[in-house]
Image (cartoon, rainbow over all chains, first blue to last red; front, side, top):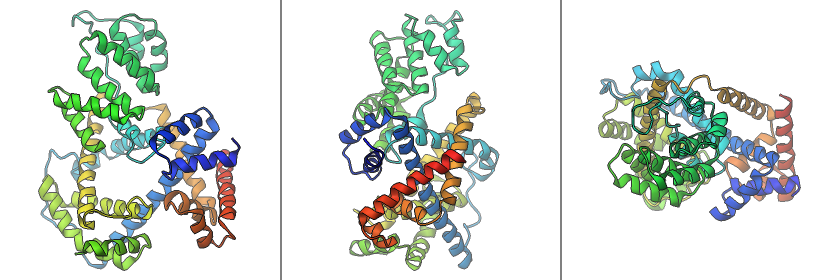
Length: 249
Length: 180
């Protein structure tokens, strides 16, 4: 495929000209070539740049209309201290919030080949590696396996090497976590399914992360099935599953 | 209030950035939106205004990039539904920020720093790209205009010439990124 042609292919993805099967096939092809992949990422960012630029322009217009009409947000507002978006808290957390939103943006930029609210974006917004608490399956003795220490320190690549040599089903769960953190979504799905076959203390968590892994792999149908099951249960992930379902719908 | 039959014409006026129309829609729904949001979610009106601005800007960009070409309900319903989603999304993100900070797992991520510089480079390159490339890329990638439309708007001989020019612009942008 020459350069002119591959840009045309990328354009088909960005312009939304393809159905999901064609898009996935083409994405797989593009993923194999780093130059094509970086061009796709760059052009996605171009689209995002112009959209943000336009939004800023419209917002500036709105502020000038408010000024022209001498109107401001009405005083005597209801202040809700619990509300995390209230100005006082927002001011305090602003730098942190900006970093976090930026991180999400990066995830979008690096991972999302399709629409702005793609399943990959939802994955990026919801995924956080599950912390290893150093407790064994009986809930008592501390475990000092190096893999877990590396995992908790965020060195997922090295931890992965060690997890792959461990037979313990729990290691499968954390191996999947490290894979999700490093972008190996398909492998993460396999490990989570394997963990669920045997069962263990992380069953609820494994179901939730499997649903997220499906989103990361852009298998929305599979993800919706998993999320529906989780939403019907009554565990720590049910509400989040229902929220995600609402957004997917 | 606009009827459904007016909506298509209205969307076209938004697409063309008709300032009088944008201002009319903006002012028409402003107070009602802020009051509705503050009542529904028990939030203060400053937050309501911020979300109204964000929702209105999203509505305009959705029309301009061809994501919104027709409406099954009124423009007001569409605008309010964007507002509702934005409020919920903002709250979800804020809650997650607090949780992440508590777990001390966010800061000092080397990947973030590296990508930050990539984005800054790209933004800087796009700012200095200049016309016609800037206009062309914006028309194609943001406004989703066809090559034929671009050729007419930017005065190229035909769609193939516009396409060749687009290829040159992408090449130039990549070169700028590799040298910045």
